[in-house]
Length: 546
Image (cartoon, rainbow, N blue to C red; front, side):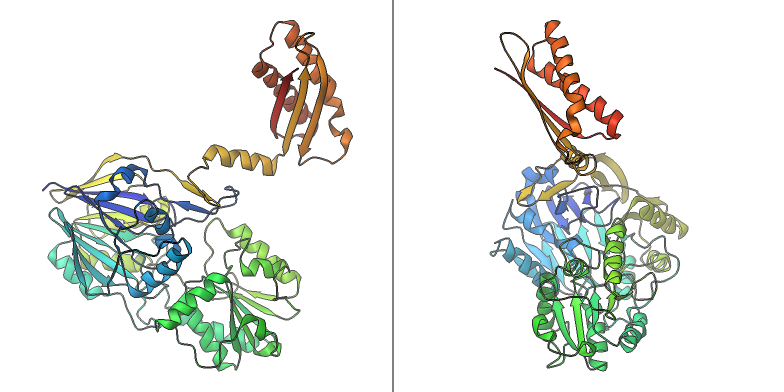
């Protein structure tokens, strides 16, 4: 029947945008379809999607999309994929599909095909025999998936760690990992995010005393910011609030939505009369208030950022408030987060974060846990996934240290074939970034982003000149408009005559092509701005013949 082809389309070489395509016997299976959030050097971009252009004309061959858990970097791009083929069956756990459903409703994608699964279930879809295994992560109901085909078995961990004392009592099922290892795992796809971190990831319960201490030390209101999907963290905050006789309100649309879903499904336990509307919370004395908010990564439009800027509708920081950032710091978000911290501190808040207290533990397996998994699974081949290149290389070194000889390092778009029990790189497909900008998907290019960066950092100048088509002389202008420079109308007076002189010289030499004249204007203005202002703005010259 041939081999099994594996094509990572996101999540390798980056933290986020996870998506992997498996091809066997002409049919396709997709595992995860997530987004990556933009960094400062990608202005105006809302989301970044995986690039599935290489399979766009084969979407009818997709048997299913398997979702390992409900984080945005694993499910967030699903609505955009379903726009191209609405009836792709979706496979995932109860909470994962519930979180996805709310997202699909926002995109007006209501009639989708669901297969709800849980740990221990097996499901055959086309030539793929799927078995689901419980794994512990920073969101409930996460699953690893074993994919059996005629070419061999793949075990994909998804995101996982090995918390031995999880809040929900649901541990990573190492017994099933070992059983699958005994059957024979031909290719092991393992989460690399924490591979550089030695030892074992601390238990989620280890931060409970710290959260309790924060509440004990706070004489006024407490505001907690965390990921809108971190149900376990929110549960710890709720438990602390109850213990200290405080009422709770959610702030931020995604937080309100996700926690309602988690509560309705029984994953979040909120005692009666503890939860109130955010607007009603202000009627209570400050020492009885707790706000649980989005914005722990400094997102500009998030609730916490608006609170820090004092432009939130009804939440205003007061002297003595405590703000707890109960999350990790995603690489690339440092500046945004510190801006929020400084903004909160400016208004008198005490800010508790990972840099000054143990208020977050990772949701990913550290080096000790990965070594443990390699030793019990004993796979024939390993493909590190989910992480930057340094994380994947560290993960590869761990695999080799346990005696696994064939470890394949790949990045997005690299094709890996499993043939006769051996995995190897077989080629590459085009696999770039797909930018979402408002309602536009894929229309923004790297060149557009470069232009936006220039506009934001260096400014913008437009120059309009009218040339008499009969005499060849400048008859009007130059009229110069600029952004990012001094507002004084005389700022560009010194460059107007050099523009006229340069155009006259070009026309005398017989160069009357409008494009050439525009380039002349661009060169003169660019040289003058560089020498005078030490800037390299975007210059748009317009030469009109009249």
